[in-house]
Image 1 (cartoon, helix red, strand yellow):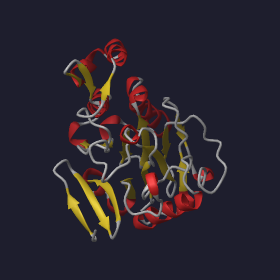
Image 2 (cartoon, rainbow, N blue to C red; image 1 turned 90 degrees about the vertical axis):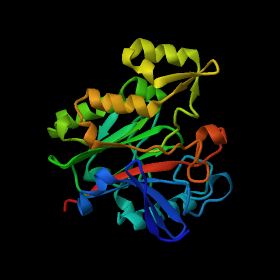
Image 3 (cartoon, rainbow, N blue to C red; image 1 turned 45 degrees about the vertical axis):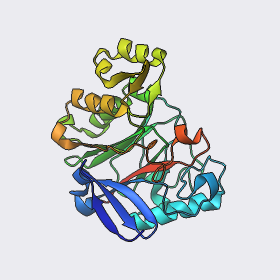
Length: 281
């Protein structure tokens, strides 16, 4: 793999630097050096075996020194100080934690009191938000008017509970953000082609979100669910402009060459990360 950028039809950009590859979003890149972000792939790190190679899961059965090295690799590529990183602690819930300069390093270099948190938000420069994935939906939120950001981990439970809407509410209440100003990116995740769910999940969505039925497809008697589609609709329902939303079409289950997948690996897999940081420029 050589250096360069590949512009994808869905508005995402695949950045390649030697063996490293990561995903960025055109609607966020246009803000230049004021905002750093990416969704990582599995490529470009030092981990081995089932964690080959850019595993960023500190709670996985990988050598910690490998994970720390992997974070240094991606941070160097993004121009982020690894000591700025703040980790989530995901439980498929709906808790959004507002963090600031005092939280830098929590999860990687410092013990963390950030517990049971599936989304992070900040208005502070040089505080890098990090959430983790291996099929679930990453959501990036940026308010260019208020200079505020959030990253959200949205699995099926979080999507059902509309965690992304709750993150927007936090940004509105804590930072004065207006949904009409928000720019959003929905990153690679398991897509409807590969995401088969049981009838009980179908019923939970239909009962809680009556409009969600259109995001299910019955394939040979099995329900296939588009989590990305529901997250997208949630953003629209909260008042975001569709012109401000980018949705990646990459499926983590299909693209095992590029991504870790919980379903493909049956839990024996590494983790990718969504990373976003304001720079104050």
